[in-house]
Amino acid sequence: MKQLRLIITVLPFMVLSFCSIAQNNPYWQEPTRIQADSLKMVLATSTNDSVTMYINRQLGMYYQEINRMAALTYYEEMLKLAKKTKQKVWEAEALSRNGYVSCLIQNYSGGLKFLLMARNLASQKDYEKEMWKPGLLSKKNSAYDARLTILSDINNHLGLVHLFSGDYSKALEYHRNVQKLNEILNDTALKSLSFLNMGEAYLGLMQLDSSEAAFNESIYYNDLSGYKKYNGLTLYDLGKIYEIKNNAAEAKKYYRLSIITNIKTESPDFEGMGYQALADIFKKEGNIDSALYFSRQAPCATR
Image: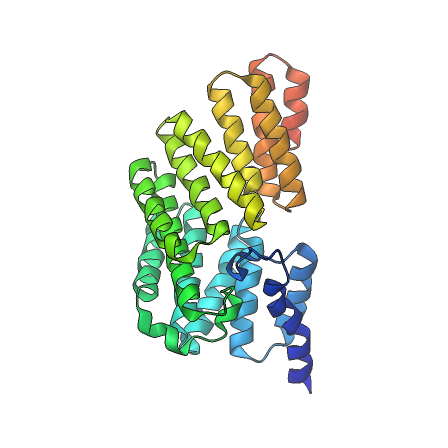
């Protein structure tokens, strides 16, 4: 009876992936704060390893940009359960997520190790055959699409490792590879992320026109897909471009838009970055009162 109640409770969160904007791939779906709280209650009573693996993945997705150590704990548990249930495609996803968050906390060598292991698994087509519930990670309920999406995101994460370490040209190579993979998937959320990451690599190379064009493409596909998680970060990056161009008015506009967007998407880390950017601009202008005000709003800025 307890197991039946568990399944009835968790099913809405599994179906959640299919109930959003039509263009969305459930791979990119993340729970809200309220949904995350409910998932924790389900997790506390779950006795099904596969269901528990999925819930850990979703909770890791919720926390990965706001509490990296919590996210890592959930992803590590997901990885253990993927290995226990011999789910190689899910294991590749767990390794990819562990790698991404490891890089966010500046454990680049550990993150790279996870990501290379993930890429090896996700590159093997035979592992699709026994995949548990591919519809949780694929709009078409396709194990092939799920594996290819995971492989694309692994390349995204590998590009970010090089971005974070300052090798912007190498980062671009990975993100261009993502675009090639996406010619098969035609995933608009993936396009949005790919253009965002390319834009940040171009920004690192100080190719401002290419960077701005990529960010605008990211926003276009962001709106088309309905995947809003990193829209605020993209707006923040556009603000950085205008700040570099010494256009303070436009920079402030985009930083403010970034803050508003990040509040809506429950992204306090990126929200804090916007506040700090405004504080820095006002400090440069000699407006100390405004600089202090915005600086006090930015306790979460860590990227």
